[in-house]
Image (cartoon, rainbow, N blue to C red):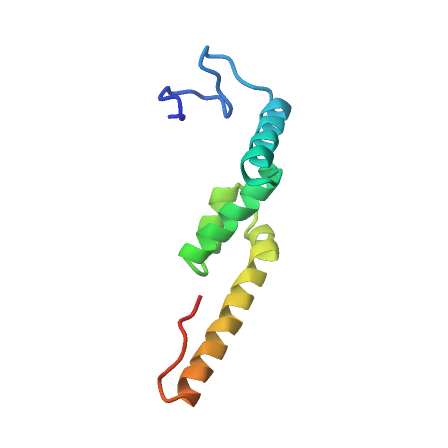
Length: 110
């Protein structure tokens, strides 16, 4: 089901049942985001954001991120997204150490 409320097998359907060519849909996305947020967001950036959001919601869920992103191999997903887990892990470690140093008083992990 797409935003227009109709079922369609096209990725970028039009109300008349036809579909947008991928290049036109990408250009429209970039034009719209440039106008609304001041930065042209391309589909690759959207994919990267989706992968990051999946792993923030479910740390370590490489298989889920792989499926969402359509990667054939988990190694592909790991190559691009495990660095985010390493950064998150370092922040968690520093927060834990700070909490121990201050006797339980410390910031939350983000």
